[in-house]
Image 1: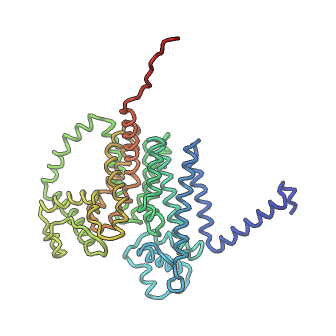
Image 2: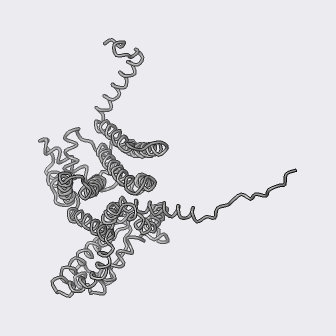
Image 3: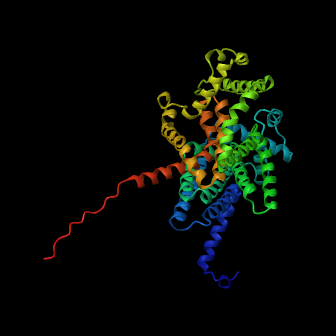
Length: 463
C-alpha cells in the first residue's frame, strides 16, 4: 500500500502497524481488555459532553485516574496470584463462587463436559441470580475470562457513576455533581466493590438507569417518550428482581416513595394534610388484627435474617434483646416492645456501626477514616435535601426515595459489620449527591457570613 496516497509517512505507517499488532496481541490474550478500553473511551467522552474549561479538565483527569487505578488493581491481582496452585485469583471469597459457576454454565451451554458435582452446583438454588448467566454469556462470546469479568464490573460501575453525574449536574449544579462523583470514584469501600466480580456494579447501573427513566417519565416531552420510559422502568424492575431478592419490589417502592415526597414538597397543603392524617390512618390500620399480623410477620422475618448474620464469620453486632438469640425459634415470640427496640436499634446501627472505639483489628482501624467520612455524609444529607428540593424537587425526591428504601432494607436485615459496609453501597450512590449539595451550601453560607475587611484609607493632605 502506498503511504503517500493516504498522506502518511513511512514512519507513521510503521507506528500504525506496531499499534495494530499490539492491539491484536492484547485482543488474543484478553479480548475483554480491548472492549473495556473502547467502552471507557465512550464513557469519558459522554461525561465530558457539554462540560468546558477547567471543569472539563478536572473531570477528565478524575475519570481517567479512576479507570486506570481500577484496571491496575485487576492487573496486580493477576500478577500476585500463583497460577500453579489456583486457576485464578479473586479479591473476595464470594467472587470465586460466582466465577466458577459462570464458567460451569458457559461449559454447559457450549456442550463442554464438566464434572457431575460441578453440574449440580452450577444450577444450585443458593445465590441463584441472573447475574451468573450474564457472566456466562460474556464468557461464551470471549472465552473464559476470570479476570476479564472484573473489567465488566468496572465498566458497569463507571457508566452508572457518569449517568448519575450527568443527571445531578443538570439538576442540582456542577459543583455538587463533581463532589459526589469524586466520592463515588474514590471512597475506598466503593472502590473495592466496583472492581469485584459480584452483582453490585450491575445492580447499581440498572437502579441508576431506573431513576433516570423515572425523571423522564415525569418530564418527557410527549406521551410516547413517557410510555417508553414507563416500559423501560418495568423491564429494569423485573431484571433487578432477578439479580437481587426483592429487587423489583424495592425498585418500585423507591420510585413511588420518591414521587410521593416530590408531590408533597410541591404542594405544601398536601404535606400538612399528610402530616395530620398519617397518624390517624396508621393507627386505624394497625388496630386491625390482619394488618397487625402482616406487620409483625415482616418484622419477624427481618429479625430472623438479622439473627442469621450473627452466626456468620467476622465481626457482628446485635440489635435484638439478648433472649431472642438463645434459639432461632425464639424470634417468633418477639413482644411488641422488643420489636420496637429492634427497629430503633437497626436504624441507629445502620448509621453508627462500626463505632470508632470498637475497632478490634488492623482492618477495622484502617476503615476508621472512611467511617468518619460516612458520618459527615449522613450529617450533611438533611441539609442538602432541603436545598436540593429548592433546586429540583423531582430529582431530590427520587434520590431521597432510592436512598431511604435501600437504607431501611439493609438496616433491618444486617448483622455482620463487613456486610453492612458493603450494602451501604446500595444507598450511598444516591445520598452522596444530597450531602454534596449540603456541603456546598454550608461553604457558601460560611463565606458570606465572614466579615468583609475593608482597606483602611487615611487621606493625606496635599503638600
